[in-house]
Image (tube, rainbow, N blue to C red; front, top):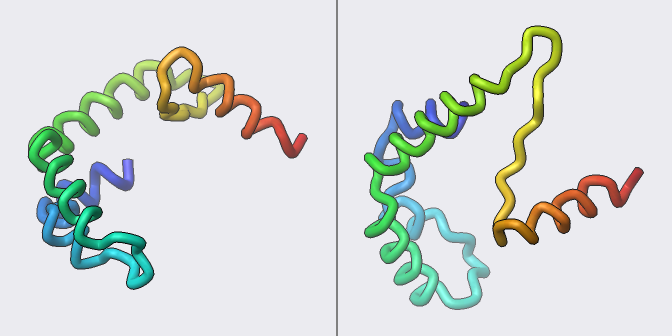
Length: 93
């Protein structure tokens, strides 16, 4: 929800220029990183990010229970990725 609010208040916050400007000084290859950021922003522009966060929030609200709230995790690597997330989450228990 915070990401969605930040994006709505300041659409340029996650533009490629802003992200490159905020790169850590010890970034391994800033030129390649800047190129990658620009490529990603061509696919996921600000309107796409706003639409995606709106859709994700709506879906998450559908699963909110009256008596309990569920935690959601965005996991990469599809059907196999949830296993590593589960192990990482429970490793300290």
